[in-house]
Length: 263
Image (cartoon, rainbow, N blue to C red):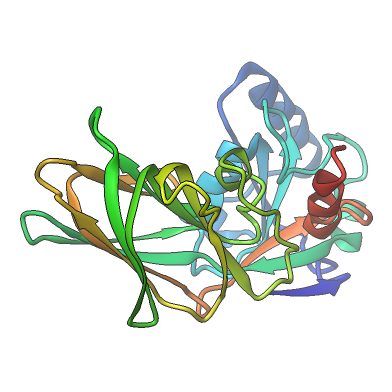
């Protein structure tokens, strides 16, 4: 993770994206009339109008492009978004700071032998697929650490995603610049007292699904879902960096810190 300030002064060609809600569409009409609009391929910056769901979709869509994303809140949940304001957008972009985050890379082996890969900005989660709890074995960097976890599931979260599903599952909130990943059980039945682990972000996590035919499990990387998995490998993709732009005083670091104090 890294942070820099004042990197957006060259952002003049803007591509606006709307989540499609009435509020987001109305905002886009006004902004396009005021600042123009170019195709994303030609843009210096992408301005996403909506909520966190749109921000995640936009980050996935432009992963590897090097284009920074500036979000403005015109949706329901706006943790990753800046405040909406029609005026002074060019000045806000010029003064914006940047948070660089890295996604997780998931490699899932399905019970039929197929291999599926996907990246996750928030978390990779394994979820029971039926009424029966999942049985999972956890290895870190090739060494078995937990021979059997019986639970509704398990997730690996990035610092950026630690305030999302991970927090709902009672996982720890991680500062954005922490070189860590959160490994968090979901409704653990056995071992009852295990609350998860904090792992170095260079660690390679392997989760084997035990009794996969009897206790089927899905693997989900953000919004990419794969059914009937046998093994899931997760590691942070340090080669891929995603840049989120934020207004001064409204950085992800600041929002994550506020979340820890309940406001």
